Image 1 (cartoon, rainbow, N blue to C red):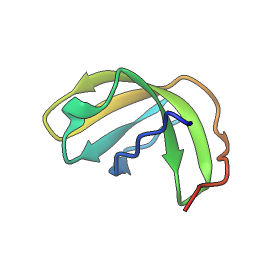
Image 2 (tube, rainbow, N blue to C red):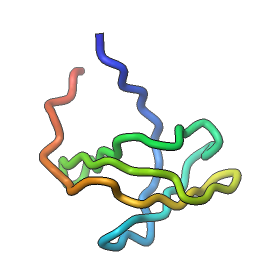
Image 3 (spheres, rainbow, N blue to C red):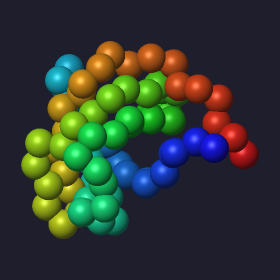
Image 4 (cartoon, rainbow, N blue to C red):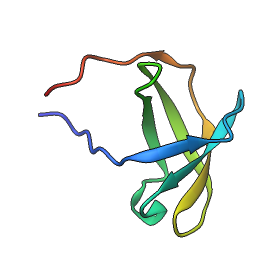
Length: 72
C-alpha cells in the first residue's frame, strides 16, 4: 500500500527555493508533502509557508529528482 494522494494544482512563480501553487482548495494540502511536476517528470519535497483559499506558497525542502513510475 502506498500513501499517495493526488491533488491537481497549477505551479506558478517558480524560483530556486519555492513556488506558488493554485489549487481548488489549498486548505486540504498538508504542511509538508512531495510535489510531482509531471511536465518535467520530477519529484521534490515541499513545505507550506503561506496559504489562502485557492493558493499557497511553498519552499522546496529537497532537490528535484526523477519521479517514480506512475501506476495507471
